[in-house]
Length: 216
Image (tube, rainbow, N blue to C red):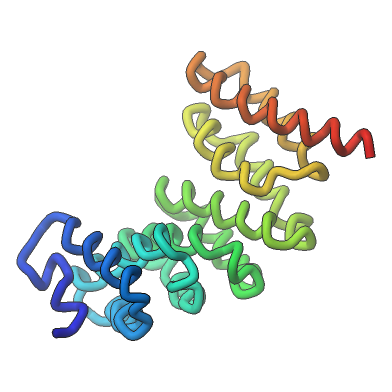
C-alpha cells in the first residue's frame, strides 16, 4: 500500500486526522522512502493531494524535523505558490528545519523575504520563525536577518507583537538583547494587559542577557 493511499483525500475524508496519523506513522517508522513519496505528492497536478501532503510534512517536522530537512529547497520553491495552502504550509515546514539547514535557507533568503512581504498571515507568522532559526544557527546571518525581525516587530499589528516576539525568542542572545528590549518596550505601551504580561516575561529574559553582556 502506497503511503499516499493513507492521505485524507485518498480515504474520502475531509478532516485532517488521517494526515496527522500518517505523519505520526512516518516518524515512528523513520520512513525515509515514505516521506519522499509525500514530497513527490507536492509536485503533482492534484491540488487536494498536494494540500494533504504538505499537512503531513509539517506535522512530521513538528515531531522530528530532521526527517524533512533534506527537502528545504522543495519547501522554498513553494512559499510563493499561488496555492495559498502550499505557500503557508511550506513556510511552516521551513520554520521547523531552518536552524538545521541554515546554509540552504539563507542561500535563498530573497525568496523567503518576498514570501514574508507578500504572503498570508500564516505565512508571515512562520517566516518569523524561519528568520529566528537562521539567527540562532549562525551569528553571521544575524547581520542581514536580525534587522528584518526587528523591523517587523516595530510595525506589525499590536495583537501580533507577543506571538511574533515569542517566535523570535529562540534567537535571543547577549549581543542582540538590547535591540529586542528597545523595540518591545516601545510596543508594550500599545498592548492589552494580557499581551503586556507576555512581553514583560520576554523583556525580563532579555534584561538578564543584556546584564551578562555588560558584565563581560
